[in-house]
Amino acid sequence: MLDGKKVLFSGMQATGNLTLGNYLGALKNWVTLSDEYECFYSVVDMHSITVRQDPQVLRKRARALLTLYIAAGLDPEKNCIYYQSHVSAHAELAWVLNCFTYMGELNRMTQFKDKAAKHADNINAGLFTYPVLMAADILLYQTDVVPVGIDQMQHLELTRDIAERFNAIYGDVFTVPEAYIGKVGAKIMSLQDPSRKMSKSDENPNASIYLMDDADTIRRKCKRAVTDSVGIIQYTDEQPGLRNLLDIYCACTGKTPEEAVREFDGQGYGVLKEAVGEAVVGVLDPLQKRVAELEKDKAYIDRIIKENAEKAGYFASKTLRKVHRKIGFPDRIR
Ligand code: ATP
Ligand code: LTN
Image (cartoon, protein in one colour):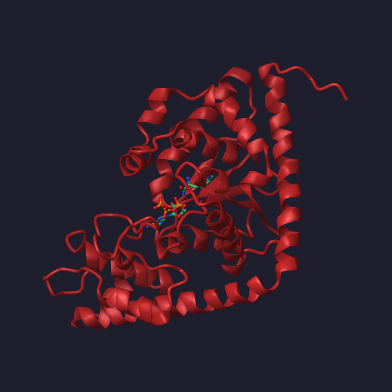
């Protein structure tokens, strides 16, 4: 609880270009929830370096992501939008939590297994302990709720286990957080292989719709989306490509799958694909315009970055001090 409100924390990595999956699965829900909670939205740039990054590109992407948070509708005067690397308490708490996390637990993380397979030449310790830094992000702010896509559920469970383990030894130090998974758009699949999630690190550019794709590109990608040979528009697991298109359509229009199926009853896939393209353009076009507007106002964004890092740092250091005291680190002499 902060100022009588429950606390929400979430973050995204500044790696690759954001996809429609990131927007519908995470960012869109953040905006919906932002009135109800005291919110911390971090650009988790420290997580990004678990795979190699070009320094200039990383800096640019981090700023673009922070700008996007605001463009998506998060008011930075009310929500704490900041860079993880500006608040050193994240790294400090992560170290402590490393000592309360087991190798076996980290070994089971599917994201680690996927990323290790993908980056076999750079399986660094940071990639392995990535979920511990994520736990630190969340626990530092005494977070109640964490809105994420389904793929992050395993990390959330681990965070809860670490918090409970710590609390069992030292008393109630951390709030044990709950995940918030949105009803629609929780897992948007690749347009080229509907058995895999849409991902910003996919090598095939046609597999993902990027938030900054222009209208024609979006329409073309929807038109080329892999479907099936059944030829009937229905919402079923047996037609995963079609189901994904309907999910995208519903997440963009606010309709239910039943309504969408009724709307396209008896029509061909081409009609649906076209409608999906238009629905996505309808969501992304205004978003891109707001990004362009915000990018012009450098001083405003700079002020947000500075003030919010201070605000986050203030709350984070409170928890960190409590942790230090509980585990027996000597008091500072002031
Ligand atoms: P990468 O593919 O490079 O690992 P990513 O696209 O999964 O990255 P993240 O930064 O790991 O991106 O995720 C940011 C947020 O977006 C998380 O909350 C995650 O659950 C959500 N998310 C990512 N991909 C999807 C998707 N396809 N559908 C729904 N939500 C998603
Ligand atoms: N691991 C997450 C990003 C992330 C995060 C967090 C999400 C880092 N720290 C804290 C929610 C809360 C991802 O890959 N999507």
